[in-house]
Image 1 (tube, one colour):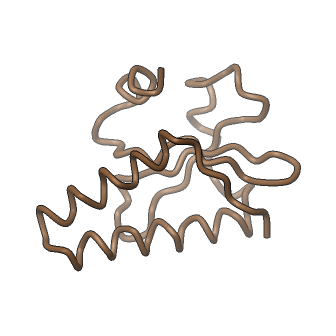
Image 2: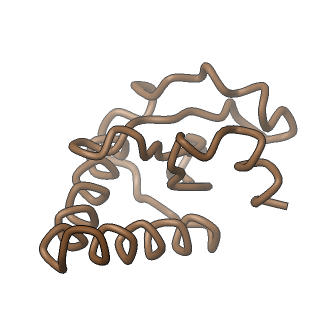
Length: 108
């Protein structure tokens, strides 16, 4: 299993997602969201090539292809990451309903 490293934007994304779910459905839903993010990251760490590279054109300057994998149980949230030789770097945990253009604008 490759270790997971988070970029600051990914940490902000997951905190924002947990707060949103807690406001809408209570603390238990926010905690479930966080737990499912961690389950998804464990899966990515074990099988990093399993994520889709379909959006790799969005960030063409990365050292490896951009991949994404949906958060289990919260499939509108996508974990965007790259697989590097010694770890997986999580770039964003993004609500796909916001669109790819917003992802790029928000990342800059």
